[in-house]
Length: 309
Image (tube, rainbow, N blue to C red; front, side, top):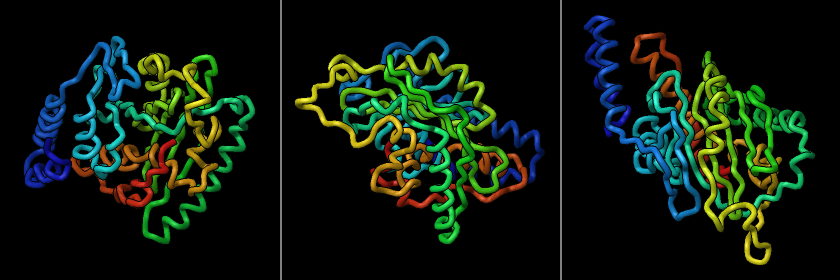
């Protein structure tokens, strides 16, 4: 797999050819990269036998090794950010380089059994304000360090917990610096006996309707195997997580770490991946006005173990 840097270099000596030739060459390069991936359908067993994925009609799965290549070589994330990926799910007519597509990255966070007694008590409007205030504080530090500001605009889809199925989902609208198109961070958490299955949608705000349309199918794609389900919890031997439903949505804001340090796991593949790829990436290659990339996220924030949420 060729790194994205080589992809840019390949176009550095096409400046003298016509726009149409550039477009054709770009499309050929993209087709070449996309065709290098081997997707799967059917039932996929995730590592360690903790869960399985049942790929429905209209979707496809990219395995762990190939997903790591996407995260690192194509989207430019640091290697440490791909350690926990269990693969990716995306629409069958979409690809990892699509301008207008979306991808769900799958992970498992072994944080323990998450109690859900507080699910009906969380005031998500108040939580939103707290998270926004925390982001303002962090932005001052980012600006002083010379990094672009990150703004939590609000809920793109308000948090909802399905107590029957033990599935929590919500979406955030995020603005990176001066980028014209805001980022969509769609989150699904499936609660299990020893932790949480994580599905993070990687997209931009214009794809919100498309992601929402597919949400019901996506939520049914991944399920815990027997012995790992929420109902299999044994209080005599199993660990209980240090936070509950509200904490998952806040991104461990209730833990003893800073707000952005803990929620940037949601943004690892978004801040560097989507914005850098679908924003600066397309503007550079297609000859549009170039803007500063947002891939200047602090390595300390990205690599922190406590980013899981």
